[in-house]
Image (cartoon, rainbow, N blue to C red; front, side, top):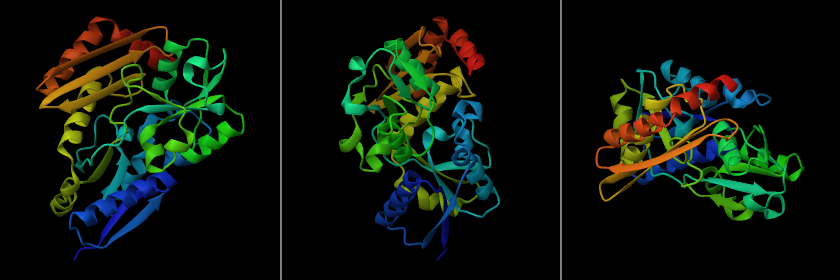
Length: 307
């Protein structure tokens, strides 16, 4: 029986996610022995610079893709939101398991909610999207970039470096921290999350048909359809995936609804739109065209110049 090697970032959250995938495969009857190869990616090593300045979330992916290409690993577990909008043709996403909670959460000292934070309060976030969405609602607040693993960010908050921070609920849930630390869930209709937030992508070589057949047993069709819709919507607006764009899709009764938002870095311009239909590409085109007709491309261009 073929021994499998899975590549993973070495952070605590990444290891939790990778072990979750291994257990999910076992539950579906995959009995191959699986070893984990841990790696510190470029994104894990460079912590003193904002993500947007060092290449965006894709910097968490490239080193693992190199190991895949060189056949040092058989598959890799990624947070799907870290994937570039255009993946190299050598690779494929063999499975997208059921999605975790896609929302963002506010974590603040003394559990003060967003509306009640003092004027000039400092919010820690590594995301241009989150910063822009916060400023659109509370222009009096300040944002500062924060990097590092989840537990490190919470520690920085507790030390008084920030009045509050914003993190993805999915990661907090996976680390069993949500009940302990979350002050407020930021609902999707006001804070549209990053594309594919809360979803995991299991990547392998496109030529490795045996691996694809093994991994596909943990694929969740509804999550796959929703995240494909989100990634397609983003590709119609900004293939570089650097502007403050949020996209979220939900599937119910064979109908898909796509929510999207685009904001200027300062939060002074914010455009949101949602649409529903049966064909995700047609719905995505409707959403993108509406946003573009309302000035989205200018906001995207100006935002990317300001990064």
